[in-house]
Length: 315
Image (tube, rainbow, N blue to C red):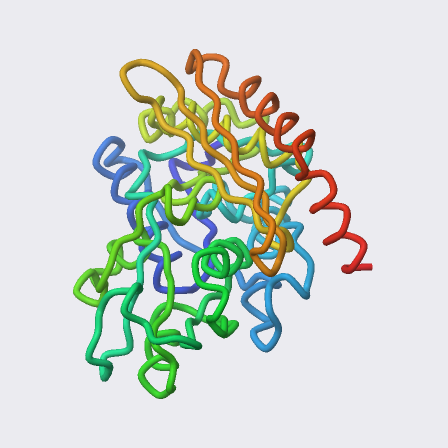
């Protein structure tokens, strides 16, 4: 329930997270000028542990748990997340009140500024590519098993500095984040989703609120984008059925084309030597059911064994 015409937004403190929170704040202010809106920065587990790969520190709410706690304790009124960071099983008492229109879902290659080449295909044999994502690592190694993959953490500025100070050939990032921060000039190549399938929810924002906050729910409805919601609902249903997270290479791309929901997905081994891919399409209203169906198909065609092997090694 909104108290005294005031809304408090909770967010992480990275440049990208602050951009996202500011976008939500401006969208609300344009519609409801009489409401005062404040922003609170909350440090999450994923922000505190920067010296380990994400896959080594667990994958349940690394970038959302502390913010959700503040939401449940009424310290904030809504939380702004990158949708790809939001677990597919939400904390009881909380809901995704809105999912924003998606930015470009594709991944991009950023070549080392001192190298003579800009294209990924021109990276020499045994080249070094940085990424913090097992999903990207798996798909890169499938295309180029000769590569050395460097694990990288930190915000965009930190990653850019690490690249410039290294002997790496380049790094991979999500185009959405690079574009939102105004650093598009860094991009030297944009990968097609068929070359590197994106992460679940990549490019969209998830606006999380308390389940019983009907007043705020009504206010944020205009920030939601129906086609993005349908597409990401299918992606998240697939991920939930696979019981995947950042410890497992899973990529998927849902979209609405000519009134039809299209979904591509992959599950791969950590070394990229085994990848199971599949596609499905149908009614946008059935995106969640279709996501589960595709997950079942992938499991039956070898994804189950891949997932079991990865989980066994994590124990």
